[in-house]
Length: 274
Image 1 (cartoon, rainbow, N blue to C red):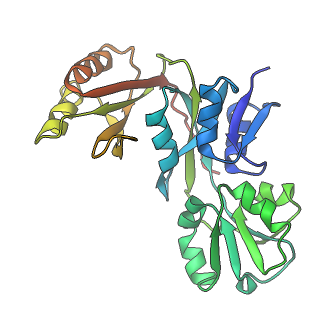
Image 2 (image 1 turned 120 degrees about the vertical axis):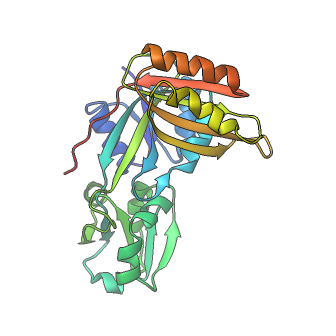
């Protein structure tokens, strides 16, 4: 039986995504930090992992991007999860009574409007996951509440005291499947590349795609760990690496780049919000 690693404990959005992506796997390995998902896959203590990489409101998940750059692992697929936040507590109370809100950083970013309107004076405490936040609330004796999923409230026996906290009903998080072997078939390709620090280098790099009418759906720069003042670019490309125009573009880019890594071609998830 395959072993799948996700951010835990039970009740996280990562678990929700994993159960959909792998069709209710029975052997999930829960770890307290995203970086440990990468460690387990790299050390072959897990066959695959699923980690969040991007949220439509909060943006890129920095720790995921850092670990993608740091580890020689590949992207094997993606899953887009609609995110619906609840406010949950040990007992029924008016949200205005809450003095402490516990959750993880991206959840706070996704609910800034609600927090400003309803809980402007509540102290915020940060943990690694929404599941961890819910598990802490079960033991709390303060006027405390957690931000997380309705399922987390069910898992930990909490009361939902407010619904739909997210600032945008279209709130969604993209998760990527990480594994040790690269895939080359799919309709989406991801790469990392570095360039010489000189005028026009990025223009010349992107020109290899523009000339072949290849669309980049995402491009961003990230610091390269352990190297001072060095950055790499992460890019998502529309199309698979077996398409001649994309294969040629990647070959030309790799010859121009100071650093190049193919992360995989995989199936792009087509999501329907609900």
